[in-house]
Amino acid sequence: MAEKHFKYIIIGGGVSAGYAAREYVKQGLAPGELAIISKEAVAPYERPALSKAYLFPQGAARLPGFHVCVGSGGERLLPEWYTEKGIELLLSTEIVKADLPSKTLTSAAGATFTYDILIIATGSTVIKLSDFGVQGADAKNIFYLREIDDADKLVAAIQAKPNGKAVIVGGGYIGLELGATLKINNLDVTMVYPEPWCMPRLFTAEIAAFYEGYYANKGIKIIKGTVAVGFDSDANGDVTAVKLKDGRVLDADIVVVGVGGRPLTTLFKGQVEEEKGGIKTDGFFKTSITDVYAVGDVATFPLKLYNEIRRVEHVDHARKSAEHAVKAIKANSEGKPIVEYDYLPFFYSRTFDLSWQFYGDNVGDSVLFGDADPTSAKPKFGSYWIKDGKVVGAFLESGSPDENKAIAKVARLQPAVADPKQLITEGLNFASKI
Image 1: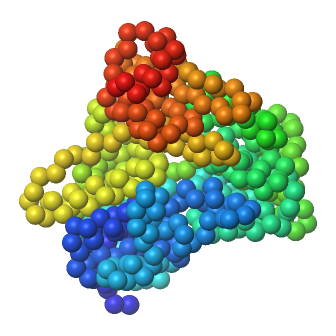
Image 2 (image 1 turned 45 degrees about the vertical axis):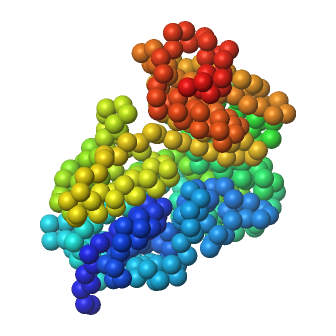
Image 3 (image 1 turned 60 degrees about the vertical axis):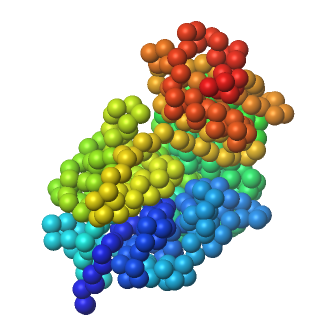
């Protein structure tokens, strides 16, 4: 096979790749300069849709509806957009070897690609129970959700098992979002997770109590403090039951596992400096290797706001880091200065009629304000985190766009607060005054 050379290559075809491609075009891109190499069969799309509207029983999201960059209100980049801009979209192409010193990538089919500048945007892969040797974890109808193929298989299973029993293993993002969508599909849903409450990496016990109560009122059963240790299946290999560590056995037609992910950095092991599980970069997403950048889930970068380095797995950072890296590449080529990435951590989720946003850092002491009663007709509440006398993080359920902007501003500016109790009484008014 002939070797193909590109000025720029993006390895990985997820959210970051699409936003980087758009930024390359904005900065001025000649036809034939850029290639995106993706093992997925479709052009970059907004991955969060897979655990939300893609699974809806009516009016479900489908491609081309959620190709990037619609997730941030931008232009939808259909496959033909890449062709029009002279960008080579190499789909269904898995890179199995990366030789960074020689600037060469090799695909599973034996094709080689060389580049001047590489952006690593390989994202994360799901952690599977079979990785830990969990008995029966390779049964059919045990699903993980990362790519559109996974979502298609889950949709088919939901349609094949109307009113069936679903067990969700995990109480994080995927667990909560899929718990809601499976319930909307009229499945009998049970959630199982080992932690004392859901979303423990972000939620306080008080915040979690609201969502667990809300889910319970929707008919979702929640089992905390235990894990799945095995699965039973029938003669066809279809899962029939989930065995828990506490001895309980749950009937199951469908199992969805969401127990975390890990960054896809294997191709680059020993070639780039790593830290905190990711590829170490500077504030421009440059790695320790000249002309190699890393963005999104795989990048461990300086978080200026807190004067520390961190790796962030979230679509907002995937978008913004990709754009910043391309701006830095362009500025570097022109010998122009550019500011370092200055990111405010942001997370959000939408389930049922709920929608929350969080900005900043969830460290220090926290206070809860507003109506956090899960039985309320229109619950609305929030939380502030206070460290060293300053508000460093803010969370809001059911906020308006202006209210969400206000809590983001609080998290960015970190105003001093003399008495945390005033935040309970002032609630959103505190944020609106900043």
